Image 1: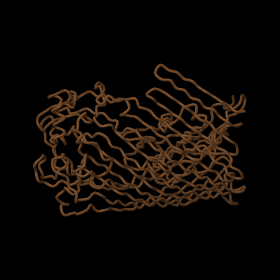
Image 2 (image 1 turned 90 degrees about the vertical axis):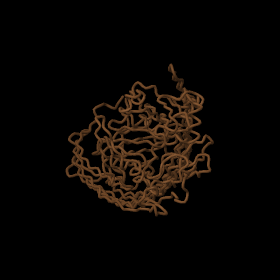
Image 3 (image 1 turned 135 degrees about the horizontal axis):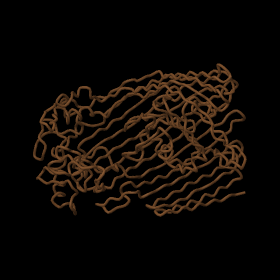
Length: 640
């Protein structure tokens, strides 16, 4: 019988309406059917060790969310299940895709690889922004804690996140959800699947979400230009049965995100200047933070994903192979912080804003002394300049794996992995003339928003790995396991910043070390600080770099079932994240702006800055090693 379900939830601040018709005689494919009275709930099955096994049988810490858990908890974004997982936290910062996850205190930095392996429907995702997308059609989530390099390879220094999505089955299946809430928040999800005849089943999931966000810009009098967000996408999936021993899983996904970026606020924390004016040293807990930028931030992200995965049951093992391709383009453009440092104080457009008070009194602290004006960051003036950042990635990967049957005393798996990753990263800053913005890395001096500082790099990584695992029941209830993986990653970077496009002096403080800032000088100022260092005066380009990083990643474990539903385990494992390169010119920037500086303490003591000789554009590989001891059991009766 067809079923229709509607839920109405009302609170003092919002109205949420969800309409979820479900058409089918049974539960949606891949979802757990609701338990009837007196029935035992289905056992949680996980794949943390690349094979299906009961949660209590795996010698590793795993938090698993079933389809019912996901529905009851209202999990719609990665932040939702991360907030429900002990020992796991997140920070969502600059833009839509920038979700930094911390697992057991091990975090990651911006513009670096993730600290966990991310697997969707058995396919390892290589893009660091792949997690931060709408969780539509998800049926199971597993958060595996601790280094998992032996099983999942590169980046699994802190753990792994494994997600399974809805799968078309042998019966017609459809449902949709509509929602509306305050701040003009809208949500829609649609799923339909059906057998197409013979051995083929197909399904498609479509989703849409939008909100104006919680914050408003008081200067622009706008309630949808700070943390606004819109995402939509479609994800078709086709399952092909290959006789009785095989299956092909073909997936595609397209999604687009439009949102705000750099939803930051700032005040001064300068104790030495606090005596002159208390605005320079404020209590962050008492300051009334407001969004007062004169630029509406924009962040555009487009994702395209394709994958084909096959499973074949052979006489001695199951052969699993998959190939995946991902293409993501992503940029944001928003207000800068330069006004706080006076970088554009001498420009005519900044001086005009100071003179005209940009239509309203500027927020405190604001001091005027000719060219030496001091404003807060993200101010309602053109004195901030603007910032533009771009992160595009295309990657192709393939894995082949053999897995022995699980119902044997000796179990094993082994495989090969390869990935080719190309990434384009741009970080730039420029002047805000009030003439609009070109959304591109390099804007010439004749443009409406001329670029003053530019990092533009093309990164290329080639990853190869071989891995294997054996498990043996030493005694009927005692398992010993050993896994080993070897990862090798060759990385290179080429810089795209030209030297033949110097900027007009006086835009800001990005001048050569011996060049006085301000209009009227005749010094040459280059886009990348590398060219501005005296040692590189004769350079016509920024040299490329390359290096290879490799690591053995073992894992050993013992698992003892001392009672049917109780297990004690101990394990030790290694995780690895490749070294790599910062944007070309990063070390030059540090030396240019901080080399030779001195710190004057309140007591008058003068101290030179530490040596900057160790600051360079390459960073080392990261290796984590962890031992874990634990006990697993089922304390609650799952029957109702």
